[in-house]
Amino acid sequence: MHETQSDSRQRWAFLEQLRAKRQKLADVLSDEEYSGIREIVEELYPDRAHFIYELLQNAEDTG
Image (cartoon, rainbow, N blue to C red):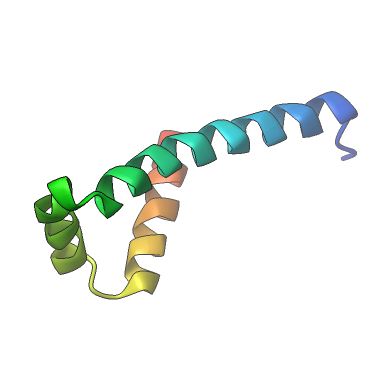
């Protein structure tokens, strides 16, 4: 199956929206005011690979 230019643009737009949302979360987690949240996330996911796996699993679950 050949992907059309429109499909490609839609996928790119989706990825850009996802990146922007994740950037907001990253900004919060890097803010000292919210260091408690960052510590909780780091305790839940001490292994970066596990964290990435969870993100991928969540993405798969949504659609």
